[in-house]
Image (cartoon, rainbow, N blue to C red):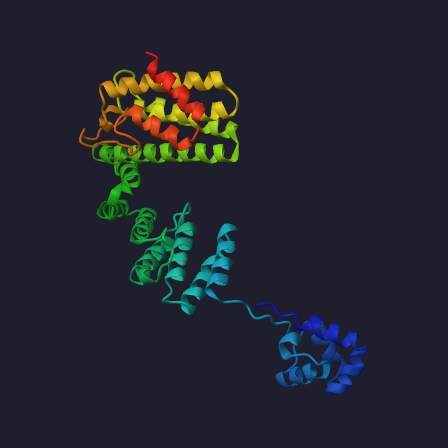
Length: 357
């Protein structure tokens, strides 16, 4: 809290054209007392503050220069966020004040846990990590208050696991993640900790395989989505660029020989690329992309293989399967995608490519 009393006394006195001696006479003090107030060497007693505020026709708050700080939850979070972005240690003191004021607020408790975790990174911050762990545990019974769909119990478990990691208790962190690894959400964290920190590569490999498969699926969907977004905006250069990048990624994961579900993925990406090329006026390039897509679709449909063990770096059992919902065959999936894109010219080029052996 910052007060500007000395400056305000001087300002209000000058605005009313009084000398220090005249103000002193009005208040019944010495001119030296007024001088010390205005220079910040001393402050008036409470009674004199009230009398002076009344004389200047201002409130005591205005005379002091006090502005009430907004201590609501959103304002508190904004201050904490600013301190944290600047790595200002004041964030931790502010966090403790917030916890005292809102001890049973999920938002505040969770937010402060994250802040303590951030300040514990990179400096052997075991005390900060321990506090982050305590706050994460405190937040769990408050979770019913949460309205953010991106935060759940798994989020808290991930936070707790990171705190254990910073505290040097990596085994505890991994075991916690294993217990809450619904849908493989923590497979990447489990795998990297087992391999790099706990030196158990054989145990890590299945988790890493699952994480890689999920990442490839997410990236494929994101690439297809972005290609559609850019096309809708008329930014066909960007649509072509991201589809090409997606193809490079998928091709890098494909084994040198054999047919697998990555052929189907490539065919779909080539169709998205052809759409961007056609919209950009490059009909010859679009025709070439669709011809390659058709060849890949025919190869896959002749001997379909959806097992992820056919992908490079994968060590999961073959019962783990990849799939899409566009069609039962690669050719049908590409056709559905082109139908959704709504280009009659593109569909015509696709039929031409399908019929050309």
